[in-house]
Amino acid sequence: MPTPASPCAGCSPTTSNRHVEVRGTATLAPDEDRSFIDGMARRHTGAERHPFDGPDDERVTLSLVPEQVSCPSIPVADDPPFHRR
Image (cartoon, rainbow, N blue to C red; front, side):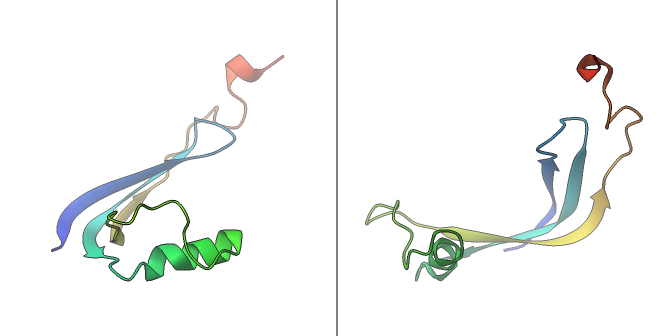
């Protein structure tokens, strides 16, 4: 079932002054055959199966259809005063 206006945000790994926010419609779907998580395990670790789930764990995938993307410009984002020497 789609959920309208679901926000998702991410920060820069190098400075907390940079971020992006994506708003859109989110849909949850079951990953009963574990195809998504097993595909991620193959891609990132070379393992055929994701090794950290218990036998009764349930997984879902979240798909987000973007409707609005914001990445505000912060004047001191690249050289914040508290990082200057």
